[in-house]
Amino acid sequence: LTYIGELLSAVKRRFITLFDGQLTAGNLKPVAFDHEFIAILNAIEDQNERSQRAKRTPTASVETSPYIGGQGVPDATSTVTRKALRNRKQKGAKPTPETIAAKTKKGKKEQRVWDNGRVSEANMKAFDFSGTADGDSQPESFDHLMDASSMGQRTADGYYTVQDLQGRAPQGHPNLESDCASDSNEEGIGPTHATAAVSTPGRFISFFRGLTGQRTLTDADLVPVLGQMKEHLIAKNVASHIADHICQSVQQSLANVQLGTFQSIRAAVREAMERTLQRILTPSTSMDLLRDIDAARAQHRPYIITFIGVNGVGKSTNLSKVCFWLLQNKLKVLIAACDTFRSGAVEQLRVHGRNLRALSDNAVVDIFQRGYGKDSASIAKDAIATAHRENYDVVLIDTAGRMQDNEPLMRALAKLVAVNSPDKIIFVGEALVGNEAVDQLTKFNKALKDFAPAAQTSRQIDGIILTKFDTIDDKVGAALSMTYTTGKPILFVGTGQTYTDLRNMSVQHVVQSLMDQ
Image (tube, rainbow, N blue to C red; front, side):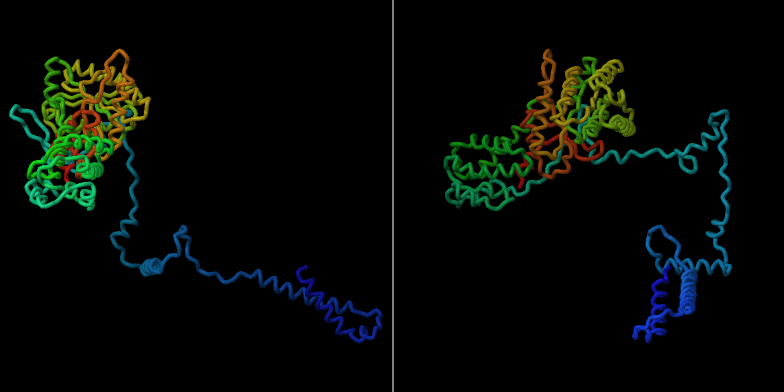
């Protein structure tokens, strides 16, 4: 009973009230209290029942907002809007075109009609969404894939050549006459003086301060200056050990050299450095690919070029740029899709092939592919056989990107080269890398040598394409590092995203950028 406590308290109070005198006197006799107890019990029970009925009575309903999916309480604006819409409906507002359209029932979707399971000619026209609304098909534009201002030139004998890499005006290079004039009043140069002269970072003209006049250069004169030059080359993205070797070479060439009467140490070191850089960057082998292709055509065989490199440097993109250049020279090109590892590699080449055919009149460029997961060496071999049979002039072999430390993939590359003996092996590398470029080239060459069959003469990289050259400003040190490491020429540099963004590397441009402040 929930009211037992209240009942006992009430009984106690009533009992004490009636029999207080007897209790105090100690005169304890049986008393008649049953009638009083029943009266108290009935009163307590009635009170408890009334209290229970009051709890069961529901409270007045309160209007609540509908659930809105946890997006928070609706704001005042949305509430007012809903009320306005309800009032508008109740008042019979004039219907608007929007409300009329909303009330109009959509017709039942018409079922497609098939004739014996085949599409009729009428339905074919209905299903053709390739044209415009009036039925006239608009040809796809490919103009954005080439830049007319970047097109190359035709030589006197009809060959199409790409543009040379354009240099910039020298910055921070006063001429030698002003060098001599500014240095004519200086006195003595040694390690302490030279170090103080080059304390301002970033200013190339402070590298080579010295006296004019007849004197013999010593290591004490050259070491501080060439130390600053080494730091300058490293800042230009030249690999550190290559910058060190070049500075040592310049030091040896200037040791015990007697300066002219009006020649400064700065001018002498600068001239020696420029000569050294030009010697390294000037190719020692032929770079005339078109002449080599003509020689192969005279032998009634295709000229084979294999593109190799690490992942993500743009091998397929720059292969397509080279293909555009070849197509401008009216050559038939077959692209061998030997990247059987990267998803989408074959489809990427198909898109390039379609674009190149659209950009060049009467262009013949086809894709040879066998899908994914196949042996790349066998695919290249079949592509070359097809090129022989169908009289293609050039075969461009696109290979999978691979890191230089991945031995299984490097073995597969060496096998492809050994089986197919390409005329040119072109390494595609980024112009953004520094020391990494040396590591990549060294290990690719080493893998081609170490994993070649014993009965065959090992091959090496024959040339280089530098990509993303438009993103590095004057930090062209990767070109120097790669050429110094391999002794092979840089055939082209990539300078953009269109098929015409391919340039011949200018030795003078690279030297100027390296010597610039």
